[in-house]
Length: 346
Image (cartoon, rainbow, N blue to C red):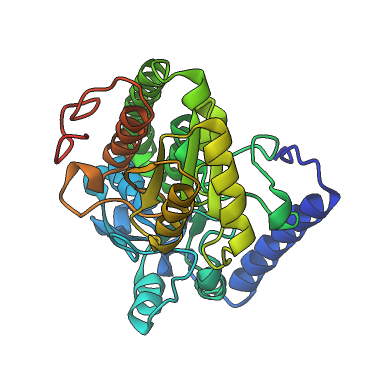
C-alpha cells in the first residue's frame, strides 16, 4: 500500500498509528478465534449478507450521498435532519444505539461533528466499518484558517467537485464492505458525479453574470470558504468556522465597514444558524446610511426539508447558487438549474 502524500510530520505519524491500530485490531480478532463473518466487515461473505443492509450517517449531505451510491443495496438513516447544526450537535442514546447496530457508519470528518467524536471512536472499536468521506481529499486542497489552529475547514461540500471526491470515497468504502457489488457502487458514484459536474458548470455560468465588484458574500458563519475559492467570491462570516464561536461588536463593526466600503448590496442568513448577528449587521449598516438587504436564506451545515428538492445535496446547492447570484445582481433562473426549486428565488 502506498502512503498518501502528507506535508505535515504530525499527520504522517497519525497515519502510521492508524495502520498499527488496524493491524492490532485484526490480530486481536484472529487470536481470539473470532469468525470474520460474525461482524459486518469487509471480509464478510457476500452470500451471507442480508439486503438491504443498514448505513447510518451524520449530516444530511452524507445521507444523500450514501443513498445515491448504495442504491437499493442499503437503507440509510441520517442522524441530523433539517436545520440541525453539526458543530453543536450532541448524540442521544438512540443515536449511539443506531450507530452500534448499523453495518456501516459514514461521517464528514475534519472535526465537523466534534461532539460525536468519542461516539465514532467507540463504534469503530466495536468492529464496525466507520468512514470519513473526506479521507481521499489531498491535504494540499484543504483550507487551514488560522483560527482552526492547525485543523482544516470541514465544509468541503460547498465545492461540488471536492464533494465528488467524497463520493468516490463512499463508493470505495461500500465496495470494501460488500465486494460482490463493488461495480454497482462505482457505477452509481459515476452517475452521481456526472450530476455534480453539471451543477458545477451551472454555477460557473450564472456566477459569470455577477459583476466582479459585487462578488462579496457575507454570511452568519464562515462555512462558504470552499465555495468562495471555487467561484471567485470574497467570503466573510460573522462567526468563525464553528458556530460555537461568538461574534463580538468588533467583528460586526469590521463587516459594517466592509459593506460600506465595497458597496455590498446583500447579506445572507443560514438555515441552521441564528439570524441575530445578521440582523445586527443590517442595523449597523443602516446607522451608517447604507441600506443593505437580506439576500435570502442559504443552506450551510444542513439541507432542506426531507422529501423536497432542497432536501437533496444538488437541490441545496442549486438553491444556494441561484439565491447568491440573483441577490448580488447576476442572472439565474428563478427556479434554479433544474427548474425544481420549491419557490421562485426573488
